[in-house]
Image 1 (spheres, rainbow, N blue to C red):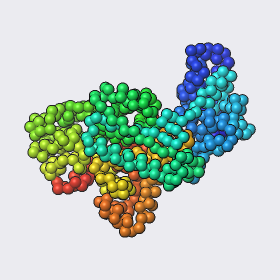
Image 2 (image 1 turned 90 degrees about the horizontal axis):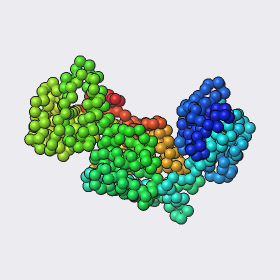
Image 3 (image 1 turned 30 degrees about the horizontal axis):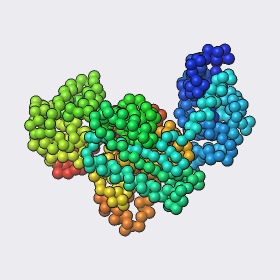
Image 4 (image 1 turned 60 degrees about the vertical axis):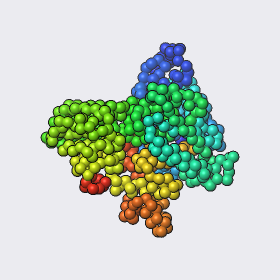
Amino acid sequence: MGGWLLLGIALPLAASAEMNSSLTELEIGRRIYQEGVLPSGAPLHGVRMAGSVVSGTEAACVNCHRRSGMGGVEGDIQVSPINGRFLFAQLGDKALATMDPRVGKRMNQAHAPYNDESLGTAIRRGINNSGREMSAVMPRYTLDEPEMKALTAYLSQLSGQWSPGVTAETIRFATVIAPDVEPERRKVLIDMMRTAFNQKNGSTVTASNPRGRRHMTSAAEFVLGTERKWELDIWELQGPPESWGGQLDELYRQQPVFALVSGVSNSTWQPVHDFCEREKVPCWFPSVDLPPVTQAFYPVYFSRGVALEAGVLARHLTDKGRQRPQRLVQIYRDDTVGRAAASALTQALAGSGIAVEDRVLSEGSSEALRNVMAGIGPKDKVMFWLRPVDMSALGNEPPPAASYFSAVLSGGEQGPFSAAWKRSARLVYPYELPDKRQTNLAYFHQWLEMRKLALVDEPLQSEVFFALNFLTDMVAEMLDNLYRDYLMERAETMISKYEGGKAEEQARARDALRPAARSMAVAQAGMDEKAQSGSRSGTTIYPRLSLGPTQRFASKGGYIVRFASPSSDALVAESGWIVP
């Protein structure tokens, strides 16, 4: 089997007599694999060659071989795929998986097909079907025949067929647009998505379209012929959020998709999040201000949005020791995002000794702002959870001595701040600082220019650009193993490696441009040569992205920044990178 199985030691044969007759064989196998629970309800036990014992969830196969059964790499150990296609397929079948990207796109090693007897020997004794002893870190155990049969049945069907939305020549995706999204942002998202899909499909070769120009995202994809055309559906929701779940169910019933890609909402995302978890559909990096924080496997986000900003500000204020304010006044709109942001900051400051007072803005007029700001003293701090439409009246009001703004909601340095407000305003800033960000996003800006797409909303557009590029590379590396669970597992393990490698690749690509072409691209993107030639640590608006098992928020911190001067949009950091 080339790799190793993380299983355990079963109870004696008598325990199987207590097997719950209401459980199917597949469910018994699933519980052994995913939960480390035997049919009797007792915990799974395993003994490694070194004598260490694992039990229960620690002994479950899923810990190393993952939900998809596709395995991965742990340190220097290659954990081979163990689903039915890889265990039992005949030699010559295209059952290949990219295992270790650090070593020249290393593939899993082919082996002779297993049968029930040889698989039992591997699991019980740690001897593979070539007669060689398997890794010492693999637990060995004495599963009885019914338990072994149940586990084999589960492995035989695990990731046994492509996920819905996949055919031999196509993969179908959808993007979701909430009804509260402004027309210009809706158009930007759709234009970005369609342009990227057309670009990808223009260089994709399939059996029915052999004349396309091949893209070389993956050499293995090129050789094996596993690339597919991408199809895009636009799912535009209507009405109140409580009706979105039903709309999504009907759209999915009419046309299943492999994953939801990007997407945008100015309010809640909870119904979309719940739909994805319910139907086991990946929700791939949507641009939302208020991602749900409930534990889930299939949705993955750039950050916690306004909830992250609340944590960053709370950490900043409480880290000041004796300088911490006695009172913080929060001013926000009485909508889903405003209430959630204010609640998150109140919770983050609980027990800090800072009194929090909430004030709700009923409308974005000067009079309304004047009313909610009444009585704010020079020692108070003020947090504004406001969008640009509400901030337009700020210029007519004298600013508080110390005020903070959500960069996510206000538009950051592009928000409608007057010179007077720039003197006192601080931004809670979950993005990379602008100078470094322009270097990281140089390739993105060039892509917009080449595709004749206007820069309208840099956070949104750069997020869509990353989501599509990361998805393109992950799907290419998956080869013919197009299983949704596998996509999410690769996102967890590959995002940091991808960011570092992609930054270097983009730097080389731009440096290879002829000097005249590079100068033109720099000028069109509004950058100078110094910034253009600077080092790149990432490819997004965020300074660093990382994920791991159970982690679903890729960027985890932010800065506190101020304006460099009342007449400038330039920003100066007042803090280091703060991770709440």
